[in-house]
Length: 541
Ligand code: NAD
Image (cartoon, rainbow, N blue to C red; front, side, top):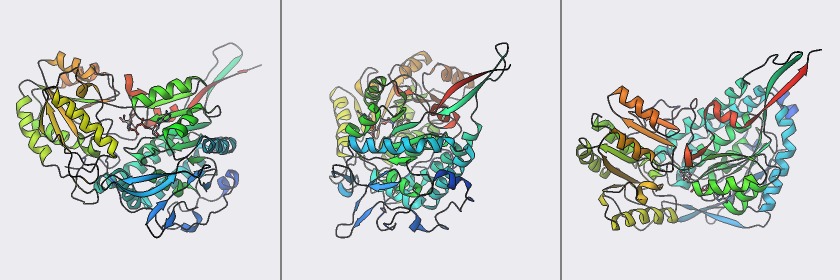
């Protein structure tokens, strides 16, 4: 599978193996107040020139089993869960336990909210430039620890190491964008709209923001959330997925001596009670969720009780519309990559190919061998392009979709079965002869499965593309610019690509239409999400 061809800051994806084992000392350092920190000269931001002993450590080495035991990061301290319960973290390539993290409770959420509420006044009083300096230091530190983070993410998610490595420059670039862009936030109008009065706009942080992340790109999703929220002056409680918390905990470790206590907190644990307690909490002002549509509906309903602001980045079912005049090779190369990268566990995956009646057969003839050539295997192997699914549940879910489609008459041209009996591997699959109203077309599979449908004309292509509940991303392939522009206008998706698929860049927004959610990640739009607008009017006389 070819690597993504966009410039390094455009999204490239990848994975990791080395755990945080023994990499950090276990002493913690008292933290200075924000005010004293802000007046300090800016220290060298990279960990190469800073003593690692200044970073409070998290993982507790368990020498006998090489298992990592992690704690959660609340108010600048590494703490155990109040109830002492722990959750096991698996390596999806082997099914073996690689770490244990605290299983958080409602009490842990209360504690994190207390810490964040306490930190908010000083943090929101800091200047954008002061916050930028700290966020940039975190970006530098991520770069300095890029290989370690890539290894850790690869091991926890099962993502090929080459893909995890490719993600890291994009991740730190996103953080740098938010750091600088927060200095440019603006209101739309200032002036005298009423005689004797002057009015202006203030853009203010919301306060304590709960950020609930999924398992497919744990570190990237964490950065898309904490980057704009912190840069805009909010305090954050990040809840990583219960399956993939390791890079978020390492991120907290790397950030621990950069931000004042309570500004960034990480609480691990399950959706219920940790996620739900954050959403219900009366002192949390906003919740941002990236996850499944069903979780988004629960979060939106629950948040309505306290009228919290809600930001939802949910699932997708991206159509790839291939008109008859498209370049077959280009489409095949992109579908081979964007349909199967991260084992298809991507909300923008090129999962639903809609092909014109004249190009359909040639496309399938080239696509099937291309997909069969994908190297699936151990994520640590640098030649591997596709790793396992993240969990046994996800493997069973994907297999269930394909089995049910096959039973109802679909043709599985390649794949359609589990690979081996160790770990959670599924063979990259291409399925045809699927009806538009079938489950395989209408629901997000989130696995290495691409469907191909034949359409009769442009109107049918656009109708089929739009007739799903999702609306995150779509692509159109044609040499006819007018046709491409007409399609881009008619497609009900938050991102439309023309003769490409999958590219993202820090300056452009990412977010859905319809059931894919509301609110934007990335770009200045994401920063605005984490602010509220105030009108101040003053009498001139
Ligand atoms: P999920 O909805 O199962 O879980 C997401 C997070 O929500 C987890 O941290 C989970 O613990 C938490 N959660 C679960 N129940 C909760 C509740 N009742 N209250 C509060 N929090 C709760 O999703 P997932 O399986 O981890 O991630 C995969 C999904 O995420 C896919 O649908 C994918 O398309 C979507 N996704 C979307 C984007 C995007 O940008 N739109 C990006 C990545 C992933």
